[in-house]
Image (cartoon, rainbow, N blue to C red; front, top):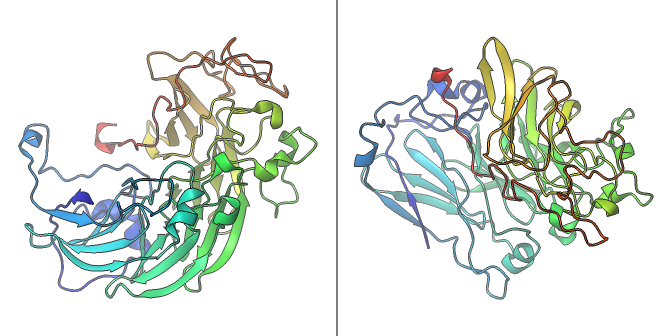
Length: 424
């Protein structure tokens, strides 16, 4: 069993719908946490001041709730699930997911008790779905929309659950574990759409982002992250896969962390995962767009406005699927990224123009630094089918052992950053 510490929040008498206006103004409700990353900009920072540096050492547990999701699948390969989700907090209630994707509504208005209101169990085939999941049994959270909780389950389904009763209103199938596609990402709700993406790059999926219309549960668009947008006649991503056998069809680029959204520009920003196979460039020569990248998309149709690829060819498993916060600093509107590749990047939110890329771990050995004009690694060779990067950093089929730093865990792994706008 897993324990989740619960914070008491003030609550109005009548439950409110989660509107687009509220989502866009999440900072105006500091007592709530309406988006998995705190707000659309993924600041993950509250402007509440009751807890500060002077008194944080005095915190102690006030209440506890036990979740049932740590129970392993009998006969499955995982002995336990993980708790990597961020609870949603609204008006004194928490909406929490366990590793298997069960959703719990918890009443914490009393300040001293965690009372479970309802539990929704998607009843997945745990052995089947779990055994095709790459890297543990995870569910990274839910979203609120109008009167509903929007959740996903590992076996590729999305669920709309009534927020008051816990009753299922509809579910739809988005991805297929039979071809190694799983769902672990918390949905990003923009107006009447919920955007998610498939995990599973390690097992040869073709990654994608997918938008579902929340009134009907119907697919609105799908944009692939390996090989590009099949609906776009001008799409050139496939030309960056130089093999003769369409390696992009199993090229990876998975999605497992929630994107950000700029309402003013109407752009949503998503990081994409590693290529598949992880390390074997010789199977998939070329830059392999759009793996290990940040994509800026129009949420209405999924078309890519701009992109940047952090590690062309990605021979290091430096997937960059984690958060891309939006910050305003020095008169510039930026999307930033503390990348696994060991550099901290900034891009213009509207155009994608490269602003900076600075090393932040003590040691980075693979890149030779980041070119101040292009934003590419200095050791990158444009047009080369196989990237060698710094000498000795890339393994190959001839038996060379690649030694590189940061290692695959990265300068920063999936654990999200936090940004305090008041300091900038």
